[in-house]
Image (cartoon, rainbow, N blue to C red):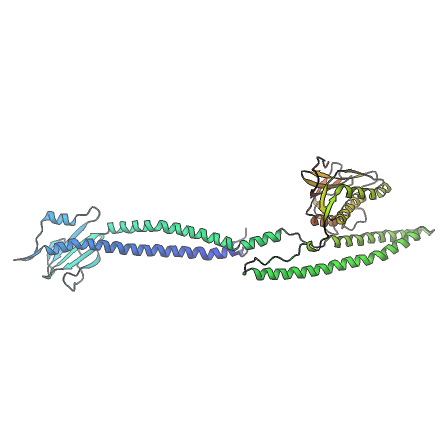
Length: 464
């Protein structure tokens, strides 16, 4: 498996890699801010309540013969300092620092600068953190009341809990929104990809950039420019191939005619043999030129394609079979047919040439005494055209490769150039048809072209 760093760049990942951490950072900042505000609110609220017992005690300090004294009963002190959650302690010292009442080991308050002006500070008493309120009386004594932090911590937790859940929900909603926004933002790229994948290899029309976002419009414009260059290059190549093939056919036909005339004369055996070999080579070159011309015609891009019409495969196949019967008889091959009505929309010229190539291949690779059968019909709202032979067959590993140009299985007899089935595939692509190649029980080959049927009732013919 490739490492994460070796993955292809992704716009979605790059956007989410920026948005998600930014949202999480905002959530973290919100949590910290909520904690600070909750702690400040709890401190302010409970400091005010902590000041009340300190003020009450300060008001109950009386000056006696022995100095300041707390004029408050033990029950009153207990009631004043009672709390069901926290522990409260107090301490009163005179101006000289002498303990008047309360616990002796409560930490001393910082120096107080003014009378009746409270001071709040944090301290530790018997290992527990305290919040202490200190106030200075008129006669110089100091009252301190300390309280543990249980209520304060509970209030902070409750405040955080009350704010954390909405914050988390908002964060999750923000991540989902970010994912949706990113998906919506890059949706035009997905549509562009689907549009390109839906095209045939020969469809070089420019992409529609009218509704394209401005961010990808330059890329589409550059891609359309490339398509324009490919169309021009393809057109030049097709013109060259068509012109060269057309120019070759005339001298090759003349040369073939002259060689046929020579073969009718009385010639020495060795000369006759050489001229016969020249005639075979010329015939092969003529067929190759014709196939190249047909291939150039079949490779026309979508916007330059010949107008299509409704074609009945039965009529098309009947004409082709009648033309090939004499050649099949000459090769001692039984050429049969099982035809039923099957109408499709297509180019009758290209379809006829495709069928002729299939029949030609079947006759070339079927030994004398064999058979070839042409079938057509409809099945499940699809039209099919089949050519089956009883030849030596095609190995399963080569079922796809035989449709490549100039591919021939090593050791295959015959004079083919490897273009016949390539032409069949090009014509099938032009008609959005699929090709099925099967090996028959008698080691022969069956090639089926499947089209979308139109204009006829689907019959129950079978492709045996």
